[in-house]
Image 1 (cartoon, rainbow, N blue to C red):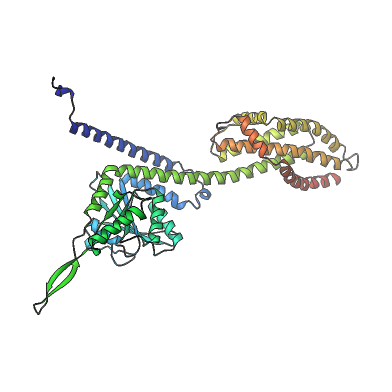
Image 2: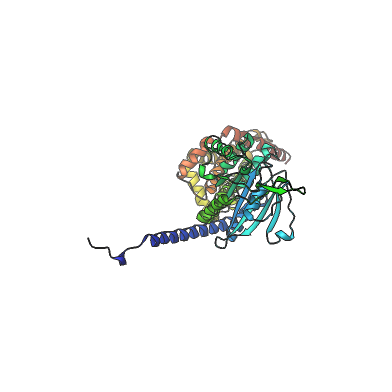
Length: 487
């Protein structure tokens, strides 16, 4: 059997190297796309001060994530109850006592930690403190931040949930510390953090305090019963961050005594898992998490923007409805009624287009009005017939008012209210259809114009609209009638 031509083969190492190179290129492309997308979101928020109100934390978070992407910053947060050794584990990972053990909050920069970038900040409504420490990473030009949080039993359940959500959704990896079998508080907190959807390691600390058999039994119970539905066995790590080692010490009288002294931290397995995660998918994690956060915030921003703009749009529509109804009710000339109605509707459409940030000319507004009018069918035809028929009658009654001593004003008002009511309902419907069209980005969506118009018209309560129009019109027309009587 002839041997294969070595010039046309690739050994396993070369193949694996090629695959690894391809994966690195793809990771860089994904990272770059995430950067560009987040920059685009931040630069095109286009929010008014009113729209920004209440979203300050979310908007600040977008900037923070963009900074993370720019600096290739990977964040790891430690959660756990008081006394589980969160700070000790973080110090053991660093090999330096940066995080103060024994105290709940507050770390003072000293000469021993001058090379570390320390910061303390408050999160949540009750100002709970978290501590960050940043250090250079061996992974490219990236940076790793370790974040220590308050003990989950220090705060009430509602605050704990808010803190977990706020911090956990901003980090890339979560370390959840326990020091034995899990309590209900720990399980509930772990479940809340799991729902955030971030990579997580359950760290069983202080294993040096248990005999080997007890330690393995606790581990099995946690793995097979407590967190079976939440974590895989590979996500559970046993460590001893600050073990106490028995050491024989000779007393002054020559006798021997056993003392327990701090030993070497046993965190190598945890280090290995963290480094494996960061090396394998560190940049991808940051890119993915930034996009998930940006999508969440962008949805909230868009919803708030649209809610506020809809409120403003409804005010514009109602103002145009009343303006059109009053103008038609008070105007005695039929030809002017039709012209006035068109002008008011076009101005309303242009005003709404500016509110939704969509450029539109007067010709474009008139074209949109024509499309909507065609789709409105019955209402558009009714308005035209009423304007022509009742308009003529209204003109006669208005002009004869001086000759009849004002007697014709009563039927004039009745005819004017009817004509104005139909015109007002028409304008209101046109406004609602326009609002929907513009809110969809100047698109009718999957449906055609007639389908959108029909859906909106079917939701209108014309009786309610007419009553609202009638109340405002009667007040204005009463004043007009009094003026005509005094001529």
